[in-house]
Image 1 (cartoon, rainbow, N blue to C red):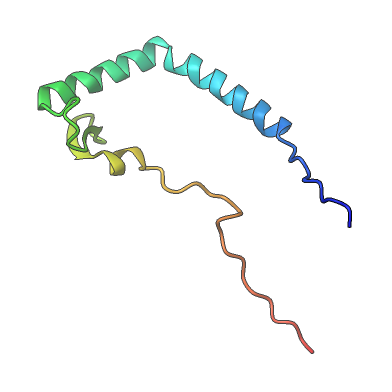
Image 2: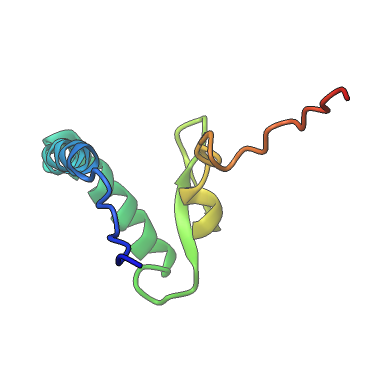
Length: 97
């Protein structure tokens, strides 16, 4: 019996798109606007006494423009779960006999 050879997945497309995204994200994070935003949040975190003490709290923006303390998991996952077709269960189809 011949040996089974593992097929290589096509990782070229995934790698290329990931590289583009990382490049874009690097530029975005380095922008003056984003640096100011992070500095403002860090300052508020330090003022609240939660910066770097691992208490699982973050300073979160409110709609009115203020700050409020919130669990970091809730604050960082506000947009919800990613919409992926793989994680969604498809409806079962009953076949007629």
